Length: 237
Image 1 (cartoon, rainbow, N blue to C red):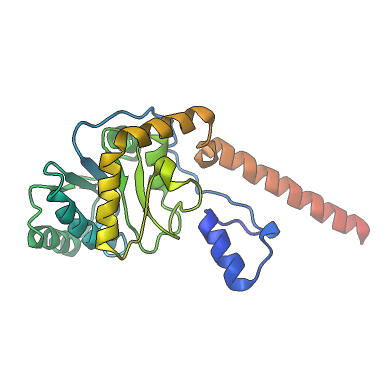
Image 2: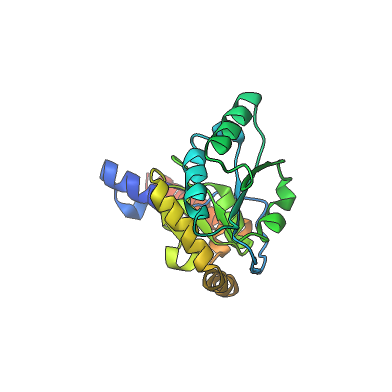
C-alpha cells in the first residue's frame, strides 16, 4: 500500500512506474490549524502568502512579485503581505526583487505568524497565493481553504487534484508570470463567488478529508486492514 499526500502524487508515480492505482491511498499531511472558519469578503484586493524566506526561489516569489506588478495596472489597490522568516541573504534578495519591480508600496515582508494565528489572519484576505515549484503538499493551502480563503496553487504540485479550481481558486503554471497574474485577476474578480462556494463546501463536509480527525481515522483503517492481511498470511502459512 502506497500513501501519497495528494492526488497528483498518486497519478505521477502510478504513470511513471506503471503501478496499479488500487495500491494507492491518499493520506494528506496533518496540520494542527484545521479549524473551519466561514469566509469573509475582503473589500480590497489583498493577498497573503506564507513560507520560509530562505526558500523564496522554490516558493515562486520572483514570479509572484512580477505578477503583482502586472496586475497592478488593472487593480490599483492590489497588495501582497508575505509572512515568514529567513536569514539576511534571503531578506536582501527578496527586498531587491520588490524594489526592482517598483512594488515597495504593494508588497510587504511581514513578521512570521504563530501557527495558532495563521487561519485567523488569512481569513481577512481576498486570497492566499503560493505558486511553488516544487511543492509536495503544502499544509498552508489546506489551512487557507479551511479558513474560508480561495487559493492560487501550482498545477501538479501541492494540493492539486483535491478540488476543482472553479470551486476553490486558480490552478496556475508556476513558471508563467502571465498565468500567475491571470490567477490574481481571477481571485479578485471572483472573490465573492469563490468564497460562497468554499462556504458551501465547508458546510457539506467536503474539506473534512484535510482535517486531523479524518486523516487519523483513515490511517487507522489502513493499519487495521494491513494487520488483517498479515494475520491471514500467517494463518495460511
